Length: 181
Image (cartoon, rainbow, N blue to C red; front, top):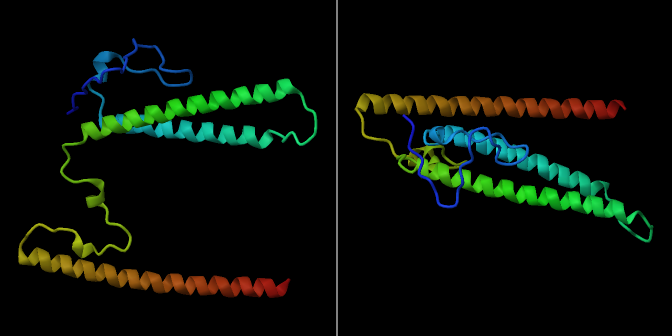
């Protein structure tokens, strides 16, 4: 079941087949816009983040290729061209961040009725798993849960011991290889 999508003032909907910006995927028709799911918005957000990373890498490449004018006379037109490219990339980057912000706000609006937030679903590193609330259940289920938790603790300890042994073995191998050289 798709949630209805309220229209925000100032957000223009383009006709079908018209792209939102050069290099951006076309927006769906307005009828389909009302049935966009948060998952679809997250996918668009992921693509937007990928575009942001690509643009940022291009900015770094432009700045890396630019030679500092430390007394050497270079073509003024070349500097103006690179400066123009840099300005265009920065402008596009700002637009992508605005788009990402709008997608985030829309996802938050559409998922506001969820009972649990993401911080309640996944515990933080170092957080005691016992601090997570557990609904009351039968004693047999509670006992089974405690047994499973104890088995997980034991397996974690065994895995830690194996990782320590592997680490020590790798140290020894690296030390022997160093002495061989």
